[in-house]
Amino acid sequence: QVQLVESGGGLVQPGGSLRLSCAASGRIFSINAMGWYRQAPGKQRELVAGITSSGNTRYVDSVKGRFTISRDNAKNTVYLQMNSLKPEDTAVYYCNRAWQSVFDWGQGTQVTVSS
Image (cartoon, rainbow, N blue to C red; front, side, top):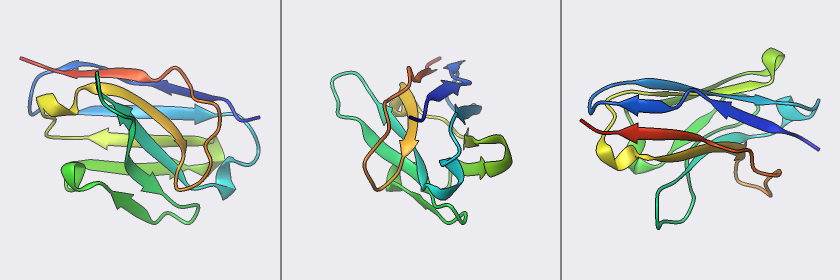
């Protein structure tokens, strides 16, 4: 079973940046499309960015041009660079497989955008 550990969240002012990391255990990481999800209070968890095993990326409209997903298969790690952050980006962020059945969820990392 794959274990996922997210990190890099925090409190940032509007317009600021954060870089999230997700370390995955397991040898199957490199063959899976991976994604970053977020869940805001009272809302459903949503996939905001995904990356295929070959590096193709897709984003939800609300983060296009501001967020960049990347991966390092040698390190079993996926990243999310978040720029121009807005208060509406406040949520717990999780990584997991994208566009297919998910692994067990990690603990997530809290991102709070506030002045």
